[in-house]
Length: 548
Image (cartoon, rainbow, N blue to C red):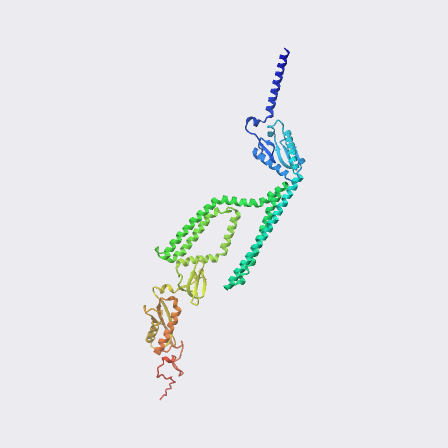
């Protein structure tokens, strides 16, 4: 009976203990684990899990919250003045804050305590204990041996840096000697050919100075890259290393990302540019065919083809720029737009005369007062057109003087074109002489026409003609008019015509005198060359008639 009673009592006691243990285990186990929804996100420092978070906080989800707290803890333990005793817990009615020198490490709320058998202050105190214990051991692991190793590694970095600087200096010194030697050899060859060596020698100091600047840049770059490597060796200077690397890596990363993100816009710009370019080529081909006469358009002159092509090309490229502008980097920036407007205002204010010349150039193009090669007279300038564009027209005189005339000046004045009519009607050249009233006009007409027909460059048909333009007090003005198709030889033809007039009048014994002469002669000889005088010619004297 007694053994049975003992066994029954033992069984009841075991059941009660088992029930209590099961209940206690259910209370201690986090609800998230029971449900199998969330296993928590660990806070890891130096590959060691300190504790886990089962709920997010604020804008951070659980994973992001654990990552931020891990980063904060890693940052403080990397400091050279880190002291685990500076970790402080502050409790208030809403949450519990764990700080290090007034810097917040993490905050614990009542929601975090729901995943533990502890209340919020107790859970926060357990976190502080874990932090001081684990972070203290991490700090103590930075022994004197580790510091010595870090210093030796830093010295190795310095030695490697000095070695690289020495190699860079040697390399640039060798490159400078090679460049000077090659330059002297080149100068010697140029001197043998008669080139101005004195001016060429001025370039060498510029090249050597550029090489010196490049060497300094390489050395500074090496030093700058070596500093982050040295700072990364020591835990408490890693932040400085990351900052120095960020100064270089971040701009490069931003540039590369900007290029990568700009590729779609770049492709759009390329398509617009290529389309515009091939349209311009098509317009150029059509203009060339019109200029060569292969394509004929009614009331469209061949000389209009090239300027029209230039106008269309400018308009197409302007339209292309308008289409491309929104795709340019920074085009939506207020600064970029302001600078663009400022430049536009400067251009409009400073180019008023240029714009007036451009408008005049367009008008002259389609008025067709002249074309390349025509002999013209603009104001007091006579010569051949050698170039015309939207701004100016260049004229080469018969003395080979190149004169540039603004298009607005040409449009505002008179232009005489000698070439246009010479090709079909014939250009009329004219010159005048004065002969006394004692010479029959019919003889004068014949002599002047014969002189014109004997002149090289004067056309036989239409026949030259004479105009008596003035009846002066002592003489008559005779004007000979002759046709020529060689407008570019006007000066030479005029000279030959004057020679022929002299010869024909001398052969006929007709005297060409100055515009004014008197009928009373002083007994001197006739004013013609001796070769034209008759053999029995006697110099006349004064005739005195006696009155009866």
